[in-house]
Image (cartoon, rainbow, N blue to C red):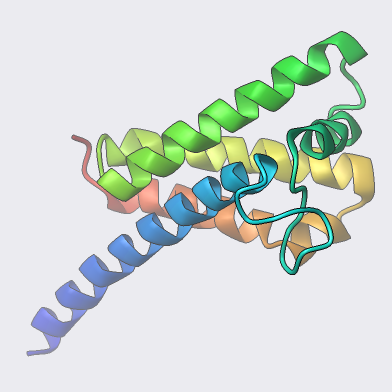
Length: 141
């Protein structure tokens, strides 16, 4: 009975982490295109692509200005693809590992640009750790 419960809990936890990370990625992508509303609406971080690009410029202060749009689009494409793949469950180990790397880059960029409190307040390190743990617990395929 305990072995069954532990196995069930493990499976449920893996699904929960997959869905939570995937939904978080896709929600962030939706926000930058105004799908969640406009700036000033409750729980809207960016509300437009221009505001997201300005935020990206803050995080990638070390890049030339002409590369900021490339960084913004690269992050958006990566988050959209990883989010969808996490929800579908395809190549889970690889997708979880890539998610952990992306989130770690984001957390370190936030910390360098705005101080360590920013990624801690938004649980970016926690999300990265969850993604890496998911990579260790998941089967590829």
